[in-house]
Length: 372
Ligand SMILES: [Zn+2]
Ligand SMILES: [Zn+2]
Image (cartoon, rainbow, N blue to C red):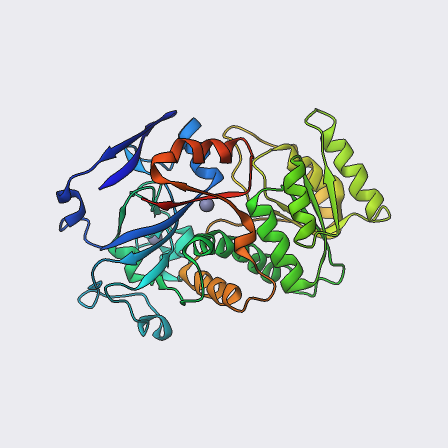
């Protein structure tokens, strides 16, 4: 099979892998999926350029996956961690699926309570286990055992289905926001810091689930125009200079009559975003750090500011299979969530370098590889 293998920063090699690789072995087990489409995430570009502590090279990257089962999974002999609804799902040869890239240990306190994304020995498809930038991907047993392979309705295209996984991650953030605050968000002015695909998915969810007034802050003009089309009430375009956090704070305060915002979502790896989020936070407000940041970056945080203003500073990471189910339902309803609008480019696997470059240079929104 054809695969794009990551070896080290700036070194991804397109190569053929032999058939033995596909047949799996007793240790790896799992089920084989033929790739239909795989989206290129900002994380993939970050790994390509800088490597990552989570990545065990050589490995095939790509975790936003839509494919088709090549064989029927056999998980009946081992204990499964599925609830009744999930275990009744029909998974047979030919079923079109999306997947949770989470490979949990099933042996830690977080796995015990179903928070597989927080597993202390977490593996991830496309990081520590081969992912979707290849003709086939083998899904590990532990992912199967938590219901991490989820059948797709016919109405969803392969391309939009790749974005179910990032949608589930954004939904995870909103669930955290709801449960943490445990009260109605009476002031529904939300600020999304970041104009990339993740920022725009947050925008769609904020509009659809909350009817929020949303301000999107970013640096890329065509992305901010896309945000407007998707319903952003205001967009703020920043220059790339050291004053830009101060400008962003001033503009948001101007737009909110000096009150600031009830919720900020950091959907950019730019660490300046935290300074902005702190500068625009109203009392009793929430800041969700959704994006991963470069290593060795830290922020100044005054505990008195958190205390006297009753600030909730939260993080959210990845998603559980349950959230992937909920995301499929959201997209299938065809009401407020339109993942196709986030996809601007389609490439062949042989064009992986081009796909990474489009993503890195912010030339569009999501690039999807849909020919292998
Ligand atoms: Zn991703
Ligand atoms: Zn675990």
